[in-house]
Image (cartoon, rainbow, N blue to C red; front, top):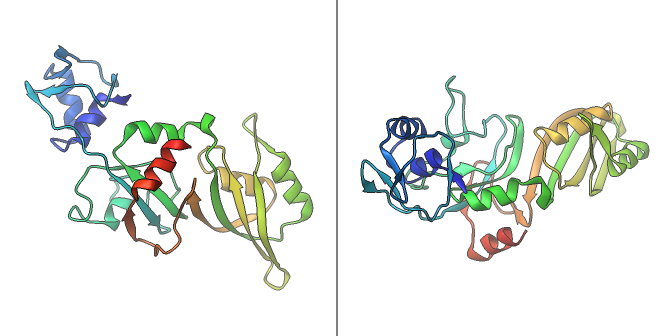
Length: 238
């Protein structure tokens, strides 16, 4: 199920804001019934009419972006800050896509873009426990005690979050920095940053290396590619 205004916008006929105006004006029908409530969720297979004309069914699209630092994970920004939409042209991606989950402004790495609301929901539903792998560099030296704490779990806002795995640990005493590969399946905004902060370390940078089994290997920062059919099937199986 997907919000009606989002589904209309994905069809390419107008923006989401304009779609909301049309819904409130009684210009939108779902399976021949007028819908005027914003936020109404409908099936992607429903027949949607705008001004009594059936909108085109959305052709599904799936992409992987290697997001650089310094870009917002959104398609537009009222303050004219750089967004992930600035990284590609409408000729490269003709469909109206949206990001699956978030990478904060200073975090780089794997970000999936799609117009498939069903898949996006599956991938962002915390109950599905999809593993994400991050490379983390910190100011300050990580200790075995800190590693144990991450593996056992740290309470954030009353919820216990823990790492699945920590590996490739490098400790550089001369420059007081550490790096490691962290695998985590739980979802929370800025979770990796929050966990590392609880250890008393300062983040230098974070890069997401993979989302599920979808890796940025071979993809340069700022580059984007279409997902392969077998990769889409794997995502649906997670």
